[in-house]
Amino acid sequence: MSATTIQPLIVDTTVDHAADIAAIQQIIANVEAAYNTNDAELMTADFTANAAVVNAVGALMVGKDALLEANRQGLAGFLKDQYVRYEVADIVFLRPDIAIAHKLARATTAEGELIDIDHAMIALYVLVKENGRWWTTARQNTLIPQAK
Image (cartoon, rainbow, N blue to C red; front, side, top):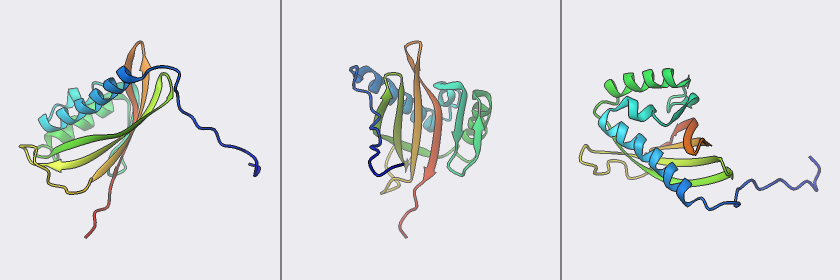
């Protein structure tokens, strides 16, 4: 790359994305509701058939069937009595039908009271719009180190 090369800013401004933002926020709200109610089917419902997910400990799952099975095991096992609150940090539209979003997470009690003062995890979502509907095609979860 030469010193004069200007890197492109990739962001779509060709359409009003208000409805798209609401749809993507709903996808993340569905994951939160699924997590808090141990509903593996709902947690997996908005992923494409060929979705790729890296969980918070670095395990890669590819395909909706593998993701559904991992969600079933996790929600029936070590996540069964865990609760969470998600916050959509940002949504950027790269193209009218491609977006990335960041989700921040904090642990809560069953009643929804925050346990974590700071965010405990961040997730990157890659979303695509297909036949008028938004889908998650990739997600990367990363734990945020906590101050001691």
